[in-house]
Amino acid sequence: MDFEFSEDQVSLRDAVARWVDKAYGFEQRRAIVKAGGYSAESWTAMAELGLLGLAIPEEQGGMGFGAVEAMVVMEELGRGMVLEPYAAVALVAAPMLVHSAAPSKDLWLQNIADGSALVVLAHQERGARHRLQHVQTTAEQDHSGNWRLNGRKSLVPAGQHAGAFIVPARVSGAVDDPSGIALFLVAPGVGVSLQGYPTQDGACAAEVTLDGATGIQMYAAGEAYAVLEAAIDRGLAAQAAEGVGLMDKLTAITVDYMNTRKQFNVTLASFQALRHRIADVKMQLELARSMSYYASLKLGEPAPQRRRAISQAKVQIGNSARFVGQQCVQLHGGIAVTDEYVASHYFKRLTMLEMEYGDTLHHLGEVSARMQDTAGVFA
View 1 (cartoon, rainbow, N blue to C red):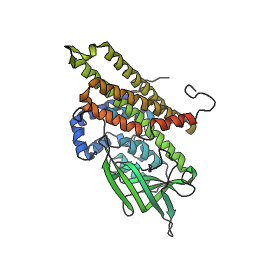
View 2: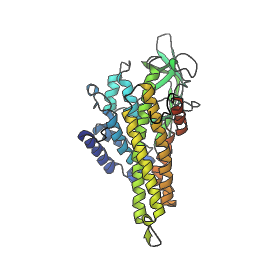
View 3: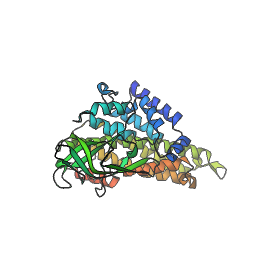
View 4: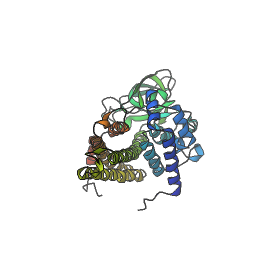
């Protein structure tokens, strides 16, 4: 299999890398964190680069690129620890709109591509423990035929900045019945209350409470759950690529530190035991990179194969992130846990990443549940 990137993909990667280096330095990022974890200026810059329309078809105002291009972009955004919810909007929510029944979908897609609106998936609920089918939010039609939603969604990325939410809601069945879930487009307004807050990595999220909020049905019950699963898988693949970018940059920072910091009048890099530890870090990084490629390449497979591959990738990314983060902090010493030093922020983001879209143990269970005729690892 050819793992070389095309000229277009290399050009895309270089363009994102240049923007990150120029506009998203550590001090600039710290200023965004202090301002609330979101920068409208950075969002506009990503739109001008064409990144927000990456996964949107050309006829709907986007670039029409695929999973590999998304992976390339996410690696570079990971290296810069970009706070804005790029993956949540451009790679998760936007493709959900493309084939939806929402009459306003083309306008929303154009607004996403040009950076004038954020649309995010609001799916997580308290008590769900990463189970997508566990949906307590309800949707009922009133006497006029309009859908009214009631419930609460947690940890919605940049929720207070969103122009609309894609909300899974139950129209029938028990709490854990996937066939009773439909997807709705909900705009902030009457019946929608937001409580924003910062997250540990410096970004922002919100609790979204729906109390009779009006929703436009995007996908009816029956087809909606498969769309939701595919969206989460795209988010996991994007997250894997981001994790590789984070680990790659943190490793480079650690190697630079070891080449300059001296003990007993020699650099840390001269100690064989520490060189062995950084070699182990590089091994974990490359394992994560290979599984990130695997996840992106499997996004076009049928759901059973895709879901297992994505969970396998998530397990490796989680294990690698924990190992690389902890080793790099220890190789630095105490400075690596101070807020003023960049390595601590990479460690925090890696820790957050391990918990998003289901933690490592959850996805280990997903992999186990999908092992049938073989051991599953080399099938």
